[in-house]
Length: 298
Ligand SMILES: O=C1C[C@@H](O)[C@H](O)[C@@H](O)C1=O
Ligand SMILES: [Co+2]
Image (cartoon, rainbow, N blue to C red; front, side, top):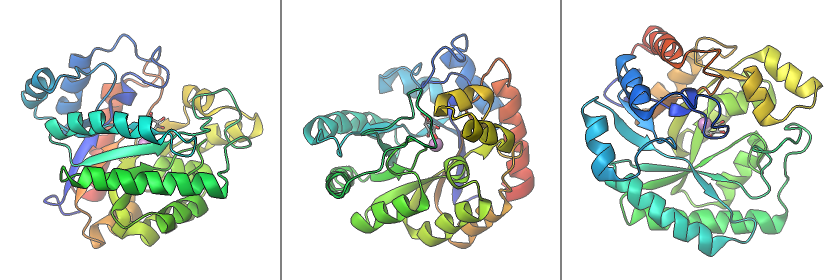
């Protein structure tokens, strides 16, 4: 890949899992960002242990050569919570802007079951026509607000949400304006469809609308258990659904090739939530960095 176009980050979720903060509660903010830098990454998303004051956070990252590229934001448009979502979005955007980030990765969390004990495959929400309309209108508005700051909004398709499958991604992108982007997460698409082909087809189809990438690998045998035993998303994570690129079932070479050929400019973020007691986050960060150097040439 062209290293002038692409920067590599890693998400703190491998050190402390904000969806289940008991996983990795012993790992401090300073250890996390120091290990990211030591493993060879120059960017990070924002975790719950990060100081929220840019004046405090910036120097602590700069000294380690780490930039903030994004932070998760939950939207609730389909539930009708437009005003509250927009209010909170503006605070979140201002923080990211002060940190120098260019994208804001959002997830439509109305009716989401990702944080519940419900079976992730059987009980995911399906949006009604009205819920789709509210969601699309909301994201069009977020994109306009972000543009005033020179920033872009992207939607993180996610297991257990109303925007999970390739059809749902197609529908979201068809209903929204071209300045609403997609956060492409390899792990969530592979998991949803149990297919590398389907995962790649979404990438190929929507390349011009993709402005942020999460590199997440999957352990097939754990996904099979989740399916057969009707497990929740979080139970799957605890059993090891996800791992770093190069350690699971996904071949990332075609992912890198498609992005490179399309002239993708932006961040690729290694994101592999697993139990840090079982998968040492520093060791796995080093493993991911080595795999990317060998397969993407960056
Ligand atoms: O981008 C992400 C953020 C996490 O909180 C989420 O649950 C994870 O799976 C993910 O892809
Ligand atoms: Co992700």
